[in-house]
Length: 607
Image: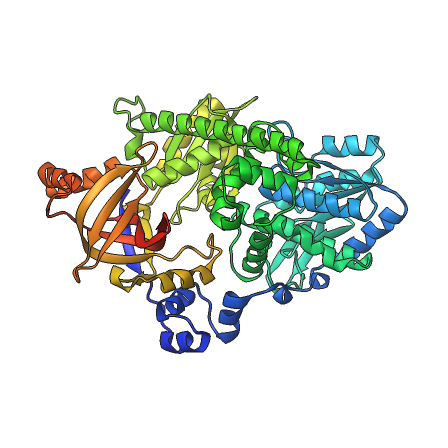
């Protein structure tokens, strides 16, 4: 994939920031690059604590929801929590179920089946609830757009309380005439927008109109936790709400929320608790993945533990993940953790096979409809791909080819698919231009889901490409370098200081450094599956350091051969004097082996 490298050019008095907050100028520059501006914001970024979180009472509907729940608990009314099948939904459901149980509620839960029920509330779930004598429906991580479903629940005499974090619907594009007659219309003159809200008894969502809560980026579990904070305050046990912070932090990372403001605090505090968790299920999941609890970071949630929680919702039932968190002994927790890890391993294998099949199709030269590799928008039909992993496969292909990608599979009654996009291509807007193709579709600029008749897949490919205006520059990966920094500036102290910037993730990416023209002294392929390269590099001042590259060794080798020739690359891998060199982006780290510490860099990009 073509890359364009840029250096962040945000201005500030880095010396003044460094002096005031006792950090290196490099760290000061990294903080500014994350748009943290002003002494108060820098102080919160470096030292944010739970005391700086917003008051749950200022979250519109939060206190009222807690008061209704307290009344229902006192009257022994049956409460049913309805969550979602992803990381956020599972953790939200866990938090509310445990908290309501602690307060003596008659409570149970339901998590929709991804394949059978789809996302969020549906009439069948609500009809079953009514037939089973449920008095109150409490949603988490869903509900804000379930207008007709909630209207049905109200007709059946149920109280409905919504906790959610998704964007509410608003009037426009014919929404008023599109089955939304039960919507509560709220006009925001400031935004010049009419919102369409469900007719629930209470809604807790920072994104709803006229909600004064300042921080709008909370995940569903964080919103649910705010309700628990208010409920526990009413029950006189406010400090006990902190026991759920590890699940709030876990969900925040797993749902790929921006790690700034309150989210940053919630994840930092959550990780502290996760490292010493007393939850049998979490402990077992950490152990099943051979992780050191004391060293857990957001990366482990996002790429190892979180996918295990998600895998059950994709290939089985998310209730298995919830049962893990609710496990009451180590034996049960261990069994469930192993099952979830096995499901995730299966999901990874299915993904790998689907990506390989898709790659072969894209790069096939004799496609009757023309070579897909030349398309600017990829539409790949994988009839046997499990529909729950179509989005993951689309994301992998987007990363590989740098193009917006749609993966289509065979559903029960029609073809179904998911798309993943690039910054320069608004996926939802482009689908609107040919919406007559789809039986159903929805999404946002970076991702979408849809269904259509199988016979129209080829037409979808051609029309999306006919409409596409992407240029080569649009499709080049943008690599933003924080600081061009020679490797001789790296020290253990600087690496330790960089840890104050954690947790890393969306909205607070891991810093990226760069140096030009590093001479390569030696190289060897390493790793269990020969999937990494260890290099010895030297810069122009003569500083030598170990470097690791965890990408495809053959890609790096091929790049060097193309530039320097087979003979020079052979010398490199023999550890002999050669003339190979690279520009690299990297992140510094400390390698500790048998009590000996050495500095090293991990190469992220090269050219």
